[in-house]
Image 1 (cartoon, helix red, strand yellow):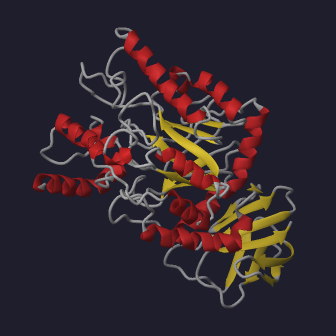
Image 2 (cartoon, rainbow, N blue to C red):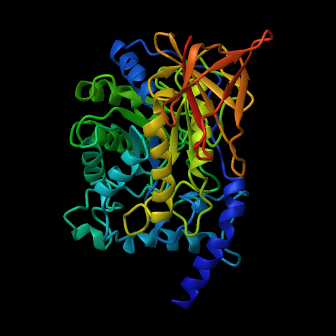
Image 3 (cartoon, rainbow, N blue to C red):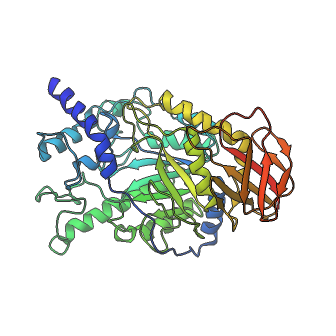
Length: 454
């Protein structure tokens, strides 16, 4: 027990450095529009939602460490000093015997994220470590078969999560890692595991690879074949393996019979199965004219970690405004605790975001881009018909609201409505195109959303 406590403490100390050095996906350079009308329609519906949650939950949540990556043998990984690679892997795999989320409450998750103003969800059914958060018949390395929670009636966790969010009318997304480091047909125990990729040459062991393809395709069919209801998004991670290498094309044909218009996100893989792009922990420098989503964490890591440095509500709102103005959506990463709830520190921030969106969300939801989309701290959007303009003043942390606001770009016709409190104010337009408004008294220090006729 003492040795385990020391190991866990060392892991905590490594989190900050690990997070700053971790592998981050960028958007693919090219984009290919899908030719399925149902997918195009679903993408348009998804683009209306703007704000979603991406939930990482698994073995890594037990000690509160970075998800999966510490068992990958690459030179940027920080494991505890003095540990051996093989010893660490065995310790990590052994967490499957400890994962016991006795307070698992997906209804609480759905309630919290609904109150945050989120409209779609993506849940991690399997990360790179291979531990399945659904009841798969193709491995025993699953929450439904390994460890104390296997006897719990809620053991098919993904089913309960998806069902809970459906009651709140969320779009439902399933995250799935194409690489599986626990599977012998990916990291075969005959060889060492030098990096994140398969650890053998396919031409030398084509039967191993065929087994892996069948294994992965079968698991994808389990998730998308109807057992877990209709899905809206299949979010595939692990871009060093392409979806078409593991039978994604065939999977999607059958999946879209169950879930017409299913959005495929074979992230960072250019082509017909990357229906929207996913820059990670970053925002594109300019507007993009195709569907995309920034996936960013509320804290420092994707999964739950103890004492995280959470972003403020004000910062998240400003980020959401920028992403929306540039034509994207935001998937905010929030990880449940080992016990199975969203911790109160996160709940407080999420509710503050939701309270702002309940008053000012018209400037975010169901909007589209406008040509003049930014001026300093202002981010501009427009209604779908282009007749109504919106401006969000992204107040940074530590600053107070000024008495007046000025911008150049979108010129209002008539008065401007301050969505924060519903008050209308006059707009003065100078000869050089500068718009100035005087803010009504009584506003709290928070981002300001303005509405006006164009």
